[in-house]
Image (cartoon, rainbow, N blue to C red; front, side):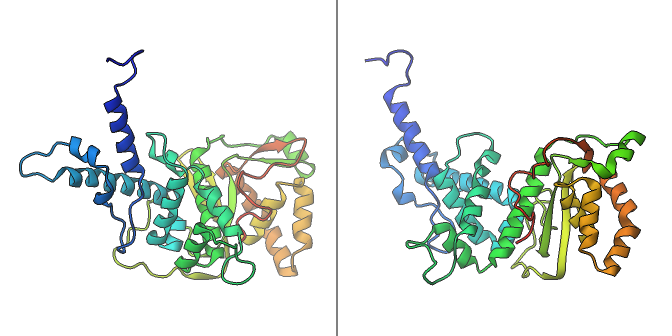
Length: 325
């Protein structure tokens, strides 16, 4: 009997179901590398595949497709979160990617869609208690265990994730143009809050992570990568969108303090609050560099005008102390 209403025939529905199940099946890492398990492929699916003379067997042809599909997914996630992948190593990161993809199988042709939800899930894992002892989750958490197995300090993974998110946000945001304050706006500056570009966020860096940019690709060094160095002191970076693309700019810690206070307070109050917490040497440095820092923010498009009403909201995903581990 022919199918009614234009529905696909039963054999085609079964073929699609079996093929989808094979593709979604995670690769097995048990042998020290991610590999497919051909013996688990549905026999009826393998039987329907055609193999040419002298070519690979049907199961091997399916395995190549299966393996390459997962390698593309792993690469998409590594490219979107290059600092997390570098902090944990690609081996442990790919385990997290496999967990994520099992929980949220891709449903879109755009591979970047496969990254949705990964950052939120990793944030939750990093917030849970780790290690042994009474505070450890009763049955454990596969994400927490994988972070522990990577032996990467949780604080480093948190910073890597925040920097990757900041860069993703900047890359996806529009460039809002440069603000050139009028004389009237300058006269109101001290009593007004600044409006920040939606692409603009700040992240602190205690480990050498900033250079592993998604725009430059994941770490491509051959052989075993060197351990990530910890800086003698904390560095601060501003991620934003410019007319030319995504930018990552190192800023002075004092300016970073002012930058963040300006999200919540009028410029004059923010400046006074920062100066109040300065040593005499820092206060002198603040006064000497203030005009240059303001010029940098305006030339970079980080501030887009004067705000009114409620305090500016922080960029989505940032904490009360952005970039701080």
